[in-house]
Image (cartoon, rainbow, N blue to C red; front, side, top):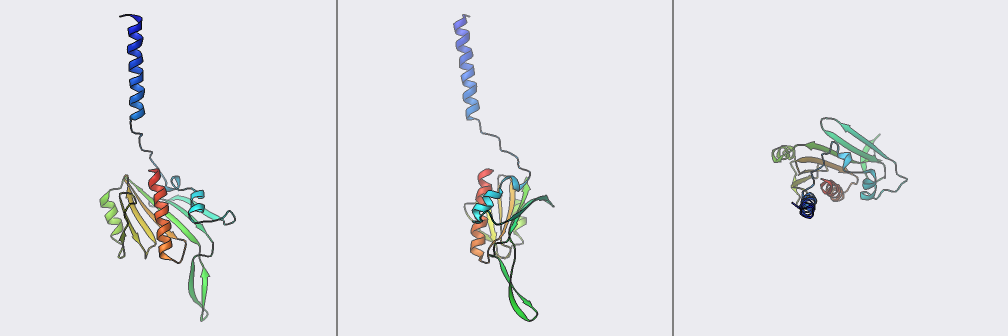
Length: 174
């Protein structure tokens, strides 16, 4: 075999290998915590929080990896009876995300079985259900199950909208 033919064959093999690598699907990244999927800046942006509002952040593994953000912005209040007088008390706004790896539709169904008020949500991951009573969106996507709890307003529709927005961030990174 001549040197020119060897170079041509090697060049062809090299280019073919590069083309195969370029079109191979990228392996999915494995996440160990929901905090890897939602940043402090994304929380500030989603809830329209300026830099003066202090946000506490916790990344913990209780039964499952959990990421929580809490802040006081005056949007969540509760009317309480204190000494015979009704008073509005300011509570912390919160975002809590629980992640379950290696989940399937059966685990998802078990998770939402406790929702007496569950509402199916379309277009969010593979399956999603919102519970107004719990202020929580449960979603299944790419073998991950998430509970996205949002209590950042006294308005349920606003909490739902924000939970769906956070879920969109999560699904976009899976």
